[in-house]
Image (cartoon, rainbow, N blue to C red; front, top):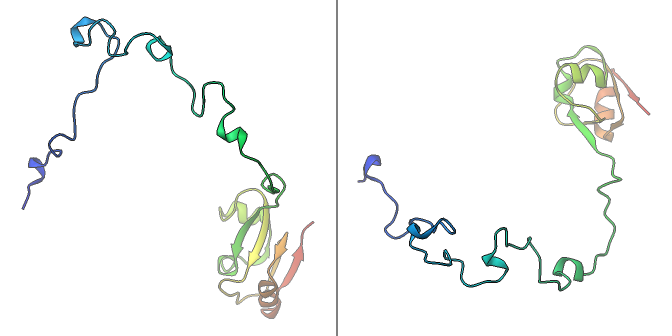
Length: 145
């Protein structure tokens, strides 16, 4: 059984890093551990990620195809029927924001849970089952533009 205060890294798994370019006292000799000449021996001499020495990089060589809907899709904030139980009368996107249930954007009501009181729910979209359950409880559904 090991005691937490006695835990230490596995032997050989840790070591000091080479301090390159910090003078003769580091034991790196005249080239400071950077070898002789070339781009990587110079100050700031590294190439960016994906650089292939001037050859067209792989990311630009591979063909791009297909449609990406990311910029054009309509995203909805989702609220469930069980979350509407705390309201009475009229439920609007503004009242839901004030309660901290949704943030800005379009609102969609889904049918998880159930509603026991008659509510007037205003939202941008409703699932068919949610609409049915709200109307069954004696409430009304209003679709916002």
